[in-house]
View 1 (cartoon, helix red, strand yellow):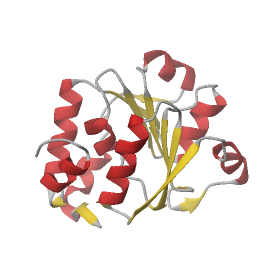
View 2: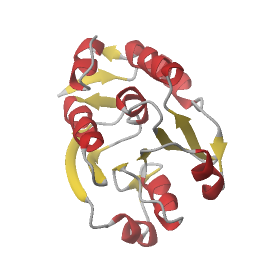
View 3: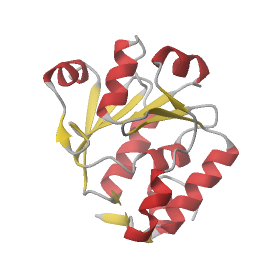
Length: 179
C-alpha cells in the first residue's frame, strides 16, 4: 500500500545531495558511522568490494532504471537474510517502510530486495536509523552521498517526508515513530 508519492514539483528537492558526495569508497567508509544503511545496488556493490558489507542494503536490481550488470549482480547475491518489499517508482510503501524497520532491528546484515524501485528509500532510512548511523545512497553520475544520522539530518529527512503527497503520519507510524 502506497503511503507517500513524490509530486513532480518536488523532484528537484530530492535531487540535491543530503550530504557530501564521495567517489572514493575508502574515504567514505572512514567518515561513516555504524551501522551503515546502503540504498542502491551500485552503492552496495562498492561497499562490499571495499570489504564492508552494509548492515542494511536496499536494492532493486537496477541502476538508472536499467538492470545492473552481471558483475554487480554477482556481488549483490550474498548469504544475507533477504526481506522482500514492493514499492512503486516515486513512492514509499508501507511494505518498504516496514522492511526498513525490520532490517534495522536485525543484529545481522539484511538485504531489503525491492520489487519496483528503491530511489526514495534513503529518506525514511535516515528518519528510522539510530543516531550515529550512516545512510549511503547513489548520486547518479557523481558518486555516493554519505548522510551521517544526526538530529539535524533526521529533522531534514522528516521534513522531506512531510512534503510528499499522501499520509505522512501513517508513514512515520510505519517507521515506528510518532507523527
